Length: 189
Image 1 (cartoon, one colour):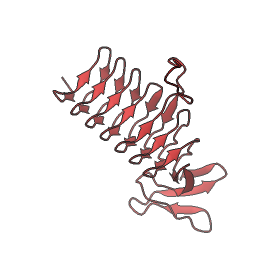
Image 2 (cartoon, rainbow, N blue to C red):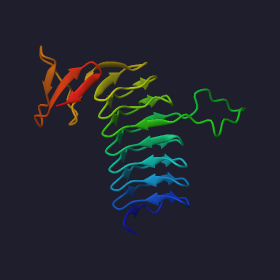
Image 3 (cartoon, one colour):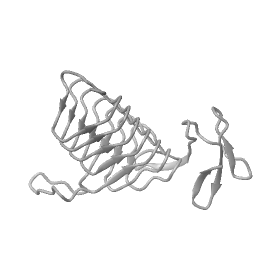
């Protein structure tokens, strides 16, 4: 095998697990999932049928990723964060096949104990603060916190809060990348 599966993990039929992936203690990968190259799925996680994880996705302990969720490359899912996939669940009403889709775009971070209400995509390199409840779309590079989550700024691709000058420009303190505010949010220049 070109990937690692802990002896207590369960991998169902039809999964495609790529080279370098690691699946840890008591995790369950359900049928027809795609686990990208170099993904790390922590302890006690469940990846539901047909979920797609891109390359280098980091799933921390106690995360369930429900059918309808796609995570692009380099996504970070913090400990015990929560996805939903039905907007109006009821125990006595079967809503299988009515799952809302959620895409977490490249490089986004979702902090510990956050909740993502289904149907709300998370933009590229967005940063969801710990404990936030996302109830609407999150733009690229946005920093959102709270319940409901509100945007309070922007983050660099290296995970630093950006401070913009009078010209609407900012520099990442770690790698020197430059960003500019425009009419649609932030762009990297």
